[in-house]
Image (cartoon, rainbow, N blue to C red; front, side):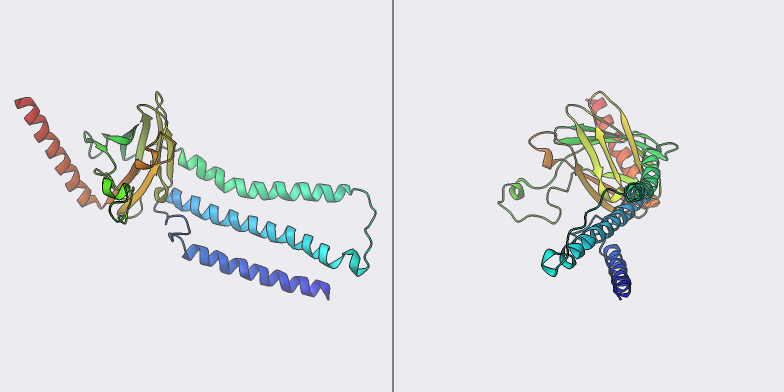
Length: 277
């Protein structure tokens, strides 16, 4: 009888976990969940995060379920007496081996993803990002758009920051100049900093890397769909740390080519005016 009850509870628990997993996948991108992943790395990170959380939940339910069942069903008020026994070598081996196997199962896909995150070889284009207090400087070093450079600063109106005007939809997450890249291209980002530690973090693209003064570090992303993806500096870089957003705009190939032409044309005009002076 007890075995049948336990099997029934197990079926209900597994059904509940499956339903919750389905709900979590549907709720991706909601305000209570991670942003909707827009790159293969971001999708790997999201999927592993969700499944590791469910593994932890199953372990939690199993451990505390057995514990509370034992406490409630074998308490002294029901006439049960405490057992008097010594340690069991078999039990100790089991509860050591099983967690080790669980950790291996968890670590294997995570390690593959971390290795993939570090593979910046054969990029279609390379952008250098330099962190300043409190803005970013960008230089397009390789690929279509080579030669483009600009600074990117917070563009949220001061009145919103000082609570003199209603907050905008992208409060503290809008900039005057966005990083623009083409869809489906591998973009290598070279990172450094001019003053203190910064970090280039765009969660929807699965990219986060520290920018360290005097050092060059790199990372990469490849956006799956056109759109605007927002992030922030993820290091405590000073009193205005919260005013250092990152905005990446991913364009279709034709639109990106037009943007590059416009940027290079504007740069040529500025250079010409400077030369004339």
